[in-house]
Image (cartoon, rainbow, N blue to C red; front, side):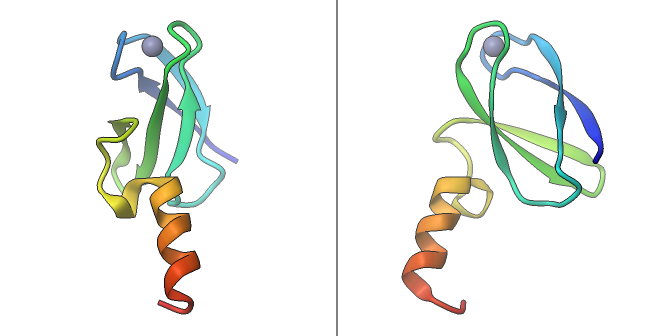
Length: 73
Ligand SMILES: [Zn+2]
């Protein structure tokens, strides 16, 4: 497991999150303002998106929907 420091896109509070050791995006609830945002691990670090502003491939729920709908693709 590895953790990275991210900054909340709403209130800029920094916090450490666990990346789970892979490149799948995941949701984080800000420890300070409690709003949800998306963290996507990338080769150079992480990318942070506000909930609803990530492209589908970086949105955990959208990915789940697409994978469920398209089967193997
Ligand atoms: Zn926040």
